[in-house]
View 1 (cartoon, one colour):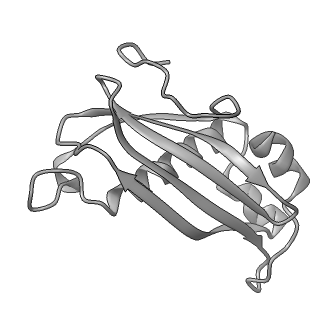
View 2 (tube, helix red, strand yellow; view 1 turned 180 degrees about the vertical axis):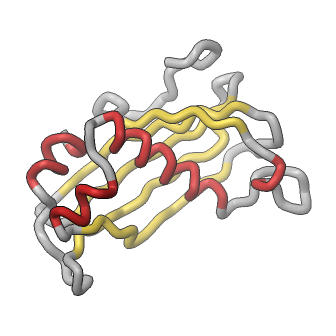
Length: 144
């Protein structure tokens, strides 16, 4: 856990995804807080950081000819984040099936206040965009 942060209160399994980000000015909207669409980028950053930490990369998806695509996302905005805020993006895999997986997230600020909660749902597809089984290596390294 980075200095100055307390563990977020995700319920269920142990957190799996963690990423720290400092808000920069181009992420802000006209009201001076992080634009709502940017939070999906934060979720993706946490997924990518976790992917790399588990010894996987985007090259693996091309080797497997299997691609995780986002099918839905939901976000709940609790507090605004502003330029210079250090954010901890935490998440855990909530569920998975043969072809799909779901991740729950919390983003907290340096005061350990929840800024945003959300979830994303993903399905693996082949090169023709047809649903397919999650590759075993991804299942072992990312989902377990």
